[in-house]
Image (cartoon, rainbow, N blue to C red; front, side, top):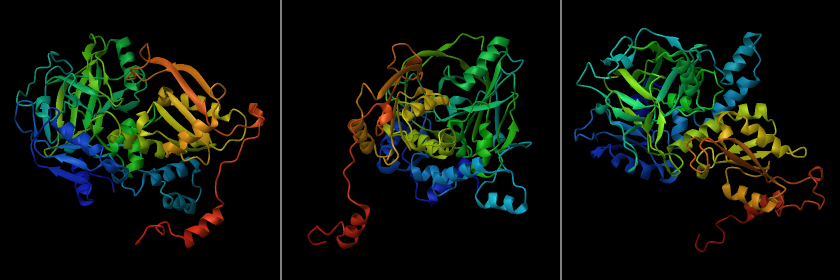
Length: 507
């Protein structure tokens, strides 16, 4: 059953023993981050934290509790999707990819039995929703003065428990936003996740990088000289932050994925001051605009998922024209930094769920892993069923050509029997199986804007290693040796006769 609210999700986490309620007052300036970082690095991702008394920079306690590390474990990611394991969702998506349109009632029933319920994927419009329980309007909307002065002086971003995550951060940052934009030509919706530095009570930075879909939308608005409507949702169904980060093809609506995952259509309501629609069950909605003709503003530094501070750079300003929220809203947050952090588990779920898509393009792929140490784009392990010479290089180039995989610094390709989720196993085969000059390739391409290593921002090099068994067609003629191992039947026999604890005295 889909979650009706973020509070509904919190109650589920509490019932599952996956939540710690913290009643001790904690400041939004660094203190919550210290506690969250400690919990994220606990075994298996620790627990979700509900900070019930967040203390604002002015010393007052916010009326809105903070939820953090909510998706920071394999178990909580599964709970957010209402499954026992994210592998269930991967199987459903795989079945959908292979499914043919049903011709009979029996075939339709088979699809439903296999979990392929796409009836509720398409979002639908409703007159109003919980996100409109409280409405605060500001000027600067269509026809407004643009000064950003609140018409409701009792409320602004200063009332929200927005975190300053790391000591050198340029200020508080909204870290778990769902940013809604629309292509002015096609009307296609996009939902992305871009950090937002708070400048004033009604303005923030909008850190959409040059490669992001929202930046492309912004470029078109710049060319027309029009204000770009933007809506930012916080909270709601926990599937929404996941969908905002999912590696969907450009132009595919994230709300379709959300409907598929939650087995219920996403109800949308029209914003109060801009022409966009947002999920009705959101906890907060920030309505506003970006003026593409306005000068860019310095944003940062920010302690990023790379484990380093990204420096000050120029980005657009988001001007807020209204804030609406639930009466009992919970503010969602995360922090990023040296792994492991909460975002590792979100990224892991993306890889697992979209594995059928990878295999549709590359049927030889057995498995893919993004180890935590690689902080997403830096390192990818791929195992394949090798059939012909240079097949590993085909996989490298193919992955570098798929969406955000273009940012991957290092790809290591191994044989099918290697466990890509065991970094030690991958590194053993890398070290054993490569002649670096023969089995590596360096190529040029786009780089992650957050990567501080390239000499020139956004462009650099990528390296791939073929750590598979070499075959004669690749010029190897020495005869590849077998790996040492015991026969499977002998292992099974010994396991029965001599238990693993047998050698322990007194066991």
